[in-house]
Image (cartoon, rainbow, N blue to C red; front, side):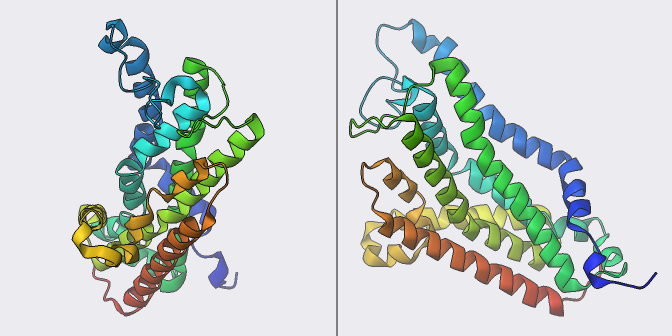
Amino acid sequence: MSYVVGKTLPYHVELYRQLKRKRTAFAYGFVLSLPILVALAVKFGPSGDDDEPSEFGSGATDIIGLATLGAANFTTTMLFFSTPFLLVTVVALFNGDTVASEASWSTLRYLLASPVPRTRLLIQKMKVSLTLSLIAVLLVPLSSWIVGAIAFGVAPLQTPLGVTFDNSLTFTRLAIMTVYLALSLLFVAGLAFYLSVRTDAPLGAVGGAVGISILLTILDAISALGSLRQWLPVHYADTWLDALSTTIDWSQMAKGASYCAISGILFYALAINKFAKKDITS
């Protein structure tokens, strides 16, 4: 049988390998547990016995105050909760662990000896890590809507501005939020993947990506930086909230998605370039 580059390390084989790993199960478990734990806390927590309404679902005209009006509002709140840290960490885990773990297990050189061309190895791992990341992002609204429907009903989405969308528009807006979140996380994904190529320590790659993301978030909060903050990819992390407006202003979401996508692609390109010249000793 002749050697065919395109048949080395098939996508479905690599995806199956990564899905079998315990870290994948734990990551998805954390994502799925967030809406369940929040719903249980609201339904059965001590605040439910108090005369004073809790801040969560209190009816205040903000995302958190409207969380218990129905599944759609609950889903929006879970997206708001998961964006700053949970999804960043999960995406960094899937992309930062993928190459560095092979190096730490001393299996990377055996994959290349299969023989799998270096560029194809990275591209296949990149495709799988992005697939796992996308699944994690999709799990948040899907699981949140199911849990919210069971706990709080299926009322249409009500915005902090007092506008209530019909069911079709509700799902359209939730889809827009989810798509934007997926695009905005490309920066973290690309950065983690690049660090995974640079180091043999998976925790270093994952922790480095999360740490840099947190550092940039802190810098974005410093008003003294002025317009310089607009060049930070994390500056647009919450721009998906524009989808709650009656008429969507696409300018900020387009800018944020473009910045994050371009920076993510740049990091992936740097990773491929670095890996092509790297000495594989493990």
